[in-house]
Length: 188
Image 1 (cartoon, helix red, strand yellow):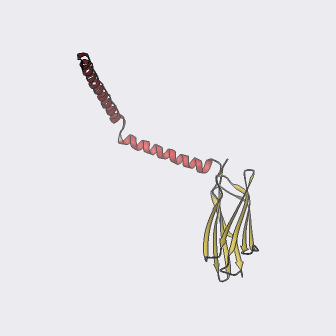
Image 2: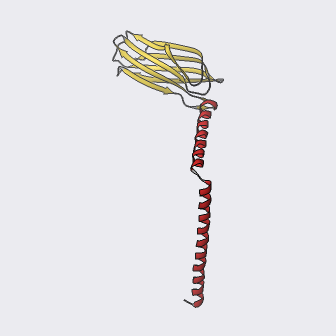
Image 3: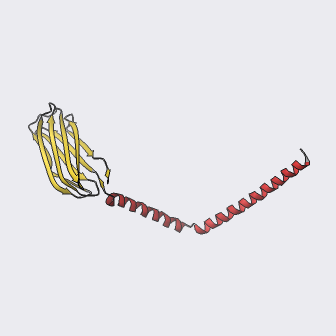
């Protein structure tokens, strides 16, 4: 290696040392500035602000953005006197549903309808559910421990559009069974 190359190597080592010192000084200044501007109080307030933004977003998505979602909870019981089908209709959407028509059908293993219940209602507000005597189906005298099918037909109107859902459940093997049927989310 020649003298010229040695001098260049020494210069580059000195230049690297100077660059390293400058970078170290810049890093120290950044750390000092961060210590002055970041305090536990500011961290707490920033965390609260983020939580408020998340809560507001959840509120907007749940109550303001129009969407359609309906669920039907079904409880089936069988015993000595016959069968009982209990239904709860839940409007989980953000707007009122109207012209509700709910049919509960109890069908034997041969496809013959044994019993039917029809529920009609003008409207159901958002985030509201309904259950009761009108949403019950009592089947007396039908044989227990045989296979049956429960069919739920739901028709309703949601802001000018007709919606229709159909769910079926095979029952008879257990004395009590529960089902939750949900329509898909529909955003407008």
